[in-house]
Image 1 (tube, rainbow, N blue to C red):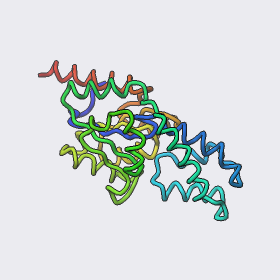
Image 2: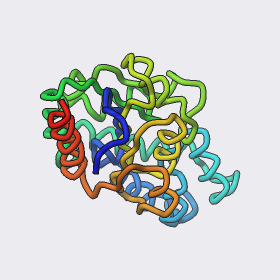
Image 3: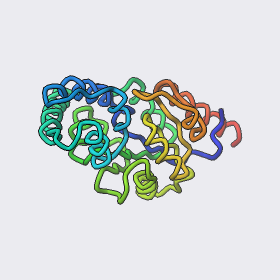
Image 4: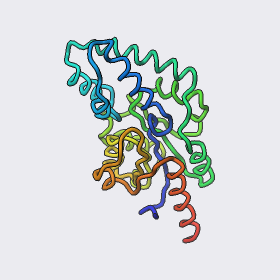
Length: 228
């Protein structure tokens, strides 16, 4: 596969793409929800993946009902997540290798996430990879969250690269929708959510891992070298 345009920048999602936090959050929410009054089916959680907090909360309340103590539930989930982050959450396989390859190609990169800045620091800080990104776009940096294009458009602006010349790497459906709406060349690396026909139509490829995504970018690098 050859990308339709030269890759001048790469924009990464964070949760479920760079780190295995989506599985952690899912397991904690499903485990803890009954103690707060109601079970959380996995399909309801899936509808929350990739959304900003306000929209995710709306999905939760539509399932639990307005009497559910959502704030107390989220506080306990957050407490458990913080403990896990303090202990260190492993990067997804292939993340470091992909960053190394982008270094070799001289391609700048950014993070575009629905998480707030403090969560980005808590999640990625221990790994030491944050300085390897030229920009971090988090909640509060844009007007509308995913599936709107705003996070990706801000990331492209901060990289100084036109959005259409950026490659977006996403694991969630709402993230893919946002990147596609921004006009980026998008590769989905599924985590909790499978690739659907809609996702295939919005992406240039579906990668089964970041190692696979690296192979795709490597083919781009070799094709550009061959055309030089």
